Every structure is written in C-alpha cells, then in structure tokens.
Amino acid sequence: DTAVSQTPKYLVTQMGNDKSIKCEQNLGHDTMYWYKQDSKKFLKIMFSYNNKELIINETVPNRFSPKSPDKAHLNLHINSLELGDSAVYFCASSPTSGFSYEQYFGPGTRLTVT
Amino acid sequence: GDSVTQMEGPVTLSEEAFLTINCTYTATGYPSLFWYVQYPGEGLQLLLKATKADDKGSNKGFEATYRKETTSFHLEKGSVQVSDSAVYFCALCRGGSQGNLIFGKGTKLSVKP
Image (cartoon, rainbow over all chains, first blue to last red):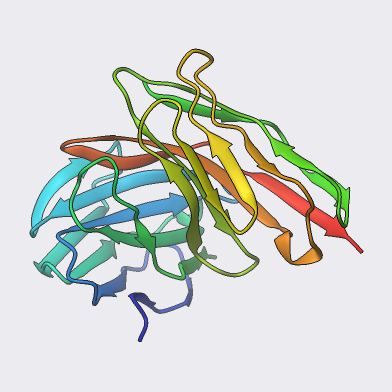
C-alpha cells in the first residue's frame, strides 16, 4: 500500500489552463504539506494543513489554491498556469506539526507548462 | 530567517570511498535536523534525523551528529556504494505551528564502480 500517493505523476499543459493535483495519505496523519521543487532541485514549502485547517501559506501566487476535503486528502489547484509554474510538486504528511516528526513524501507530480 | 546551507555538488566518488557532505544551519531556538535522500525519479525518503544537540542519527551506514556549537549536521559514510548515487538534502524543522521543513539546495552524489 502506498503511504502518500499523488495523481497524476506527469502533467503537461498549456499556459492559461487550470489544473489540479491530488494527494492522498493512508497513514492517519494530521498534517499535510505541498512543496515545490524547481529545475535546480531546490525544495520549498508552499502550504501546510493540519486537520483540514490551513497552517502555512508561504508567498505563493493566488493562482495556487489548496483544498483539504478531509485530513487524508490535500489537493492543489492551479489557475491560469504560467511557464514558471513548471516544476515537480511534492505532497507530504506527518503525524502532527511537531518538530521531531518525519515527513513522508509522495512520488511527486512533474508539471510542464508549454 | 532560518536557512540550511549544503556543500555544492555534484560529488563524484569511487565505490568504497569515504563520503562527507557538509551541512550548516541558521535557526532560532533548537530545530530538529534531517537528511533526506532522493533517488532518480522518486520522492524524498528520510535517511536519518537528530532532534537535539549531540544526538547522532544513523541509517544504512550513514551518520550525522547534531553539533550546536558549530551549527552543523554533516553527513558521513565510510564506504559508499553505486546504489548510494542520489541527491541528498539537509533540512531543519522548527516545529510547533511552523512544522514545515526548510531544505538545503541538495547535493548530487555519483558513485562510480
């Protein structure tokens, strides 16, 4: 059983389109995250949810909107896609937002905007 | 703000060579420290962690010690294998409501047979 799963694995789309990436975790964790990895492999937090409540919202364009229908799911919707949105997006989860807890990462979604 | 600095890669070693990847951090308070590994085409996996000063994390022959006095968490392995080829990320977590990881830029390791 996959602990943290993301769909789709690859997403190729044109500028201006709207797309969604889905994330599900079956670990019973309370906290979920979205990270962005750019072309140079640099990883940065985008959002964090704890029990469906938004905890962290880094400086991310308003075109990005996370949605958590329940604590096992955290989806990322992106409006009006731009070339600069091309990246690998990772979902992660942890038991809680405590500092000693390991975060479990999904396999990533490679988004390519043409 | 908090940050993590890792040595620039790529690092290329021969099999059975000794590995050190340097990592230093800047943070208020006492963060937890982590090393994550990313194999080609995969997500990140926790390699090891340390949650307080002088703790040593270890896993699969890799080790790192939390050094508060030098704000460092260097990754070491005595004898690398081809299968260790991957990108290694040092990260810190401050905990509380800010439980996200702050990553270094990653170090790509290539091990040649």
